[in-house]
Length: 284
Image (cartoon, rainbow, N blue to C red):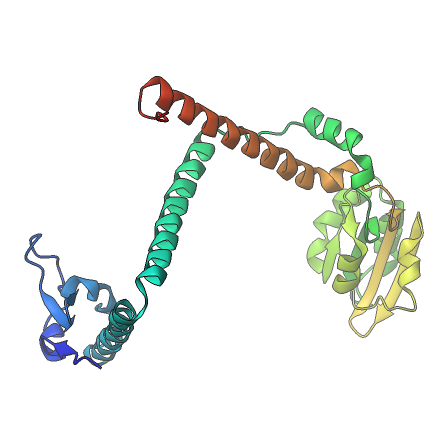
């Protein structure tokens, strides 16, 4: 295997953390493998004031060794692989470069021109047209709960407010929520039953079905305290998901559809403009 020649000692690299670039065409090499060179600025980011000189020396030495190993394998491949195989790899590299640049440019154009706003009427229209697609694969609940210590002051008053839950009760419960171990009083949103189960350890396979009954009040106890739960509404598996629950999904679907349409338009426009400006032509 070809000999690796280290052109400068690590000690000279560590004299200063200043690895400023030299004038173009006057770069300072620190290692060589055959006709390939590693330059000082290639390792400059490895050295900082936050790292000791000893650690920096190890980092730089490892980087040089890894670079040399890869370069030696590359040189070996260029010497030993068939021209046909190398041509195939060169083609793949060129295609990858083209794809990478093209994708980045298209994404920039899309980001600049894509309308990402999906208003409620658009979401509703898509939902109404595709309801069969939005079938639930798990149960959803609209519910509220509070988790309190069993010996909390005025437990009966808290329970009464929680059950009745008029506007005054909501405000009072919210104002005293600092006394609760955990709580959620927003019972107008849909939440997955699995999330409720993971949040409330007192729910077990034996009592889980109590969550799936509409307009049901549930009180559970465990070593951590008392859980008061009010289930307002329930949707079961294979029921149609409510619009509010799938709106984020619909918004993303609509945006993705717009994105694909915009990309197709960009592809047509760039070709059309190139032909018009005589930048693209097909020879007959």
